[in-house]
Length: 427
Image: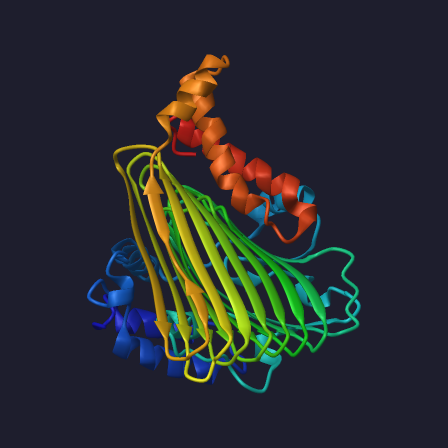
């Protein structure tokens, strides 16, 4: 990594101006590390297809403007719209700040605290986690006990605005699911405004022995805005994870999902759908570490690409020594609707154990002309036929949504995005 292309003095001022709390010492340590390591560059293998120049430029202009934090009142209508369309107990983080009332939410069996209330600050070992910790105003720590009574999923609404000036926000959420507890979690990212915006999120989730989690992540940001996110999940023995991620918006999006299978009989199902159009760049990196066996992981991501866009998928499964009995599967399938759409796909397996069952594969293709012709003979025009086939391609992932209560709203979001691609529009 090279030194950050940001003013060290401006960064230090932005950190110094954050509210004083128990996080202050962590911020200073994280700042020192970021100044040493900087932003990841394309010279790194894991970042060779994703240039963060757009994000660096937004961050630089934000710092030059005094690192302002916009008021959240302008987003009230959008917050209300999300709350009404998806039934959940919502905790709202607006422009990187915990909104009033979030820490007062009373959900039986679930404890909600600010990170600044904890005795130990967040770690910042991975790329961009140091920038997150340095500029973090505060974050959430969620503890879900075995007696938790979730009448509705617990939702994290992460919303940002950049109406006239560039904006930058940092989000951090830590989730502990206790032994034998069950959790339903929704993470929804959205944004508004005509200026550039960069959101940097770090999510950490730990599943104790016998715990289970159904987790849905939706990224539906404005097409002028960018986001990086690292999600780390640790699975103890006999824990079960059902995860679905959807990327529909954003200009430059990078998702790193790390699954650490630390206990035997753990089971992780990881599915994702990305839909990209003109000017979008969406990069998904998934890494699953099998540290013991027997255990199972299955990854399947699908991409629908139109206009001039670029997507990246890198799925890696590492079977460590002694993880006998591992069953690890990977699949990535991509549908290219235009000549200007580009996908870089890289499935990887590293196996250091015996008695394992592992597979991986990827496909890239265009719409079947014979299928299009068949639909047109049944009265559909070419746009309608294209939409029907792309909908069917994405439906394989949408149908695996682990939280049934949001099926209708998510299907509508995906359909809206696909309609835009079929019409040659940006959204």
